[in-house]
Length: 354
Ligand code: NAD
Ligand code: ZN
Image (cartoon, rainbow, N blue to C red; front, side, top):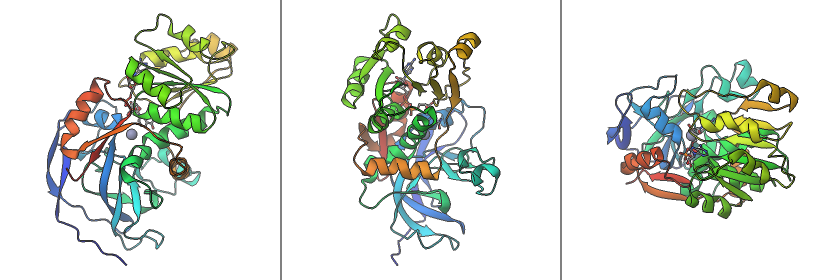
């Protein structure tokens, strides 16, 4: 069996107080417990959730000090004594949002692990992937198939899994239409590609022409610019062949307004799936329309281990190609700045060696 020389210190981005910033510094390399593995993280995607975590703008507090990050792709370099033989040193593996769960509560037993009351969350309640060596519960690591490019696959580990699950939760079927709100961002770009791979037509909604070009390039059938549109609801409905609106809406934007608007353009009998988590936001929908048009409104939260394997399988088959840019881990602050200003098309990935 391979062995790895593991250093005692490593580079990391550490949030030292709620509100941030993240500080690039050296910290000790952690040691895995009996049911855990240590992953040498090579690349990590940067999710908008990491920015929420640093700002502390959600109702659940994070650990402090905190190493963020939950789209970490790397290599297993050490494992605890209880970890089964099917995980070997040298295997490619991913740190995802769900770092661990109890595996015995009624949710875990039914494969709803994200709903486990004692779930551990990477880059939120436990340290995540913005460091060179990160720990995860062996049962929950993403098994990255051999030969897959670690840099390119990193964003699948949250963005990909989450939108793939959201599309399944929406009930949309091949040949039908989905509106993706926030289609130029990290989750949105993935959603356009997964929907296309599932045979679903996409109407992308986001702001600005650069994001519009990206949506079209990724296979979207139509693009509605929320900043330029005079009547967004009518434009979205008009983008479907019969003018009755999309069968499903995936809400991925980090602002409240689209959450108030989606039931106006979703098709009767359609589903509005909430995935984005704008701070302090509320949903609003007219009861009358919701009833008479039989609209479903629901939430969708990451994915379970099976969703992870399926999302990775789509990627391995070459069906998921999303624009990304790579910078050094030391430049995380610049990525957060661009994210805050909605300037990112696709995803940023950080290289933990720089
Ligand atoms: P991102 O910043 O990459 O993308 C957000 C996109 O929304 C941007 O392109 C922005 O221009 C667009 N946008 C803003 N206002 C809009 C509007 N009014 N209409 C249409 N588009 C608009 O962020 P991301 O990494 O894709 O994350 C999106 C959200 O999803 C975050 O709140 C994140 O925390 C959340 N998230 C949820 C889950 C889950 O399991 N439910 C998982 C991962 C991320
Ligand atoms: Zn995420």
